[in-house]
Image (cartoon, rainbow, N blue to C red; front, side):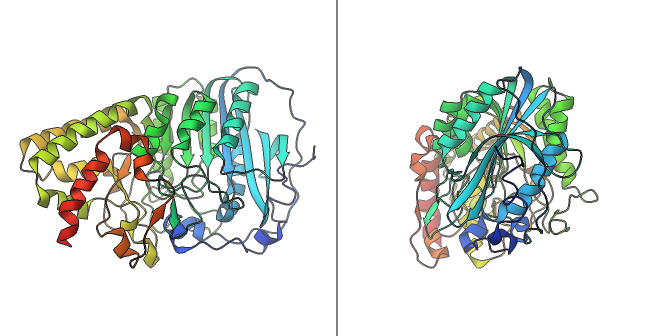
Length: 469
């Protein structure tokens, strides 16, 4: 076993020539649509410096603790610089008497190889990360859900705890996985070397293998949608993530781990509220966190973070269907058309022509429902809308940290915390100059589509709306 942390001698601290020269693969336009402004501003890796020495790995299994936190970090492409800062933050707390912190991290070395290491993260008294390495691979697919599942099962077996948190730190595009026009970033945790990624229906397989997890935190863009959460269901008590694009440096690992260590027996609801408050504080004008690479504050600080109850997701299809039935029966095309044109569109923070916000088919569920319920002349629609919003706000979403105003003037503090598919204002082909759009995962392949009438509702909208264009 190497006596240095994180392969790290050459990968993490810039000895990889491609990253040291800033020659990470360029993003195409659609990748940029699903990326974030902080990532795109990333600077070349700093000059090499010595890696922290690794401690001898403790014999396994360890004694049972309050929490085991399992972090699967995919360092492909432009996440490289920010991942180093995350690792420093993890080591600021590290493994304690109450919590274990496990990390499986992958970083590209050449165009055809990735170093992946599995370790117990230890506390470091300086800024250099420190860990005890258990396994190392010269090539391991960071986009294969089976590798994620094996990591979690290994961690749960060897680092037993009363409660478990699983974190995936990677690129994400929700259920969207375009195969044409091509995009480097698809689904969740795209692997730059293999081209593989986790399709959203594979989440069911992932958690079928891992078994129950108390908290699943997706440190990735656009993942907090009803479609994603419904695939996971009651295998996870709390599903955390963002409806919107993320900030690569807002993992807040030191704060989150310190909170768990200080409050190891806190209820999940209070933990979710604390994490949401951390998020809000970091993006509040006057105390706003700055990009550690560029030293700048985010240009558009409108971001989202929320926690959703996995157990309540099973009730969502029936709630959606009752609302859909009422709205279709009322048949108010002008109300629907206005809601379609004015609802919030996630992914709207990018700047290139190909990333018009309407191409990303996500909206906030309760925002859209309010647009209709608040303007409908039908009492049944108003009542059904109020009932669905009550379910979302009081039962489904546990905590919501969204805040600030986006470039379109929408106040994110009024979002519900759970996204869902929405039609584009213009047909997608027209927005892409007549090119046919192909995806690897059809919407009908998703469990929420099969178990609810949401896609039928969207088709009904489209038939009346698109001809008007």
